[in-house]
Image (cartoon, rainbow, N blue to C red; front, side, top):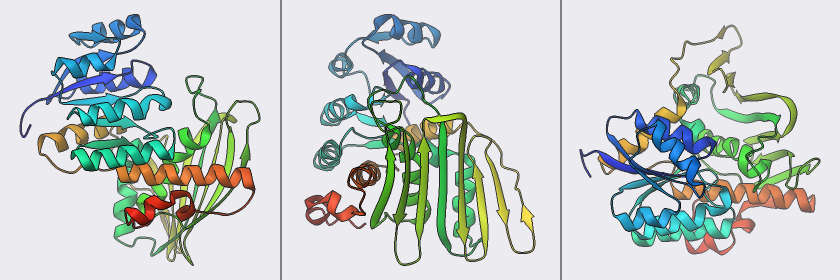
Amino acid sequence: MVGERVRVAVIGAGFWGRNHARVLSEIPSVELCAVVDIDVQRAEHVAKRYNIPHVYTDYRQVLRSGEVDAVSICTPTITHAEIALECIRDGVAVLVEKPMAASLKEAIEIYDTVKSCRGRLMVGFIERFNAAVQYMLSALSDGVIGTPLTIAARRIGPWPERIGDVGVVKDVAIHDIDLTHYFFGSTPLHIYATGGALRHSYEDYVQALMYFDEVRSASVEANWLSSKKKRDMRITGTEGVAHIEFLTGEVVIEKPDYSISPTINYVEPLKSELTYFVEQLRSSKELVPGPRDGLLSLAVAEAILASMKSRRTVSLEHVLGEWSISKEAKL
């Protein structure tokens, strides 16, 4: 596939799948060859809009066609594992939207299958491709605020009605769970959380505290109860504080004697993410975030849910169980 156009199919033509089709159609190194959805009219609408030649109602039809190198999975969370596993076993590269799977058991199966089949899978943690996040990662590496000590993240707003198979932890908070791993370079040891389901079948509000070591911690607040959408993060270091506004792409660095707000050129995060995915496939390079990132973030989400239920601190190693031992996962 090195240097060639990548033949891609979008699986799922809902809100997010339509966005994937739009962006993929704009990437010169992509041949967008098929769209799949159980609602054929919805699939046909997307195909017509973005000049996609093939429409299917079953993702297995795409695999049988032998005409794709990669798929973008934008279906409901409960279907992620089944589709991803079949694609990996069939030798097709996968970009699967977060969360990677509906359960930790499914995530472990995906991880093991990618390893055994030497497959290629990337998890759609889109915030990693936010220009503000990229700037912040570089600033942290340069020691702009010294050693990061705490992270406080907030991701609140009204319920997106298209989400009905998972709660706020796996759909919303998981973005910030992943970003704490990204910025700290490790996963937490212990988690304590409170929350519940006020208006929905699954939990719709949560506050979680994650302990990484003796000095580093992170808090995550997420809900589907607020009237206004807010997405922000504060990182406190030994020599300053950094603020990220995800919706506007703004960053503010506060030092003891000055404050700066650098100019950051906006690039649509989804465009950056999908371009990266395609170019990594074309050059046969590693896909990051990969199955391990997806598995560990889902494990933290499971720990948060377990802590909410028990009202006790939960160890991430306990949640991972035998996997962390048998796979020698470095937490």
